[in-house]
Length: 200
Image (tube, rainbow, N blue to C red):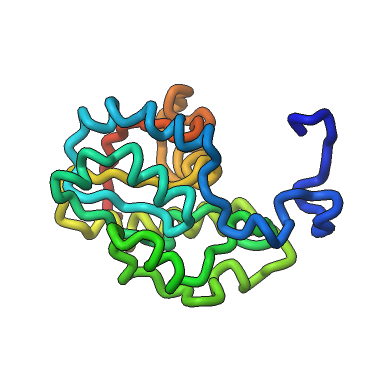
């Protein structure tokens, strides 16, 4: 699109849709993305998370390790969790690399909670269509209520993806119409939220 060409993001033809090209599987941060992540390091340094939860996709792990580098140096654990992954299906950029490769590439991160395996069984459930917004929101809800809510830490950083975060802030949790929270996240952008869970 940046070159003046429009395309259908749901088109499975790699000649038309660049996001389904096999060579961009689990695409890493670009040079610009690394710069944007580095620009967030000072802001991240003002936070005091007891754990960094990160999507296991390479660009999210890279963002976490760059933005929260000071926390890593101070012994804060980094834990990967598939519940905060980007939209599943179709888009090859969101298909995880084999888990063994990711573990080898990022030994600083604990991947024990990742169970999609070498062939990314989550993405491969429906490899020809993008995950619909309801399923993505349900997945985010499960991440918050079945995982995050049960953790003992009171301050947690979650490093993941803009579409997932947009779903969380507009569908899963009630942000009270606050546009500063509900708007689209920029690359590497950090926002602090206090989330309260109410059991019914």
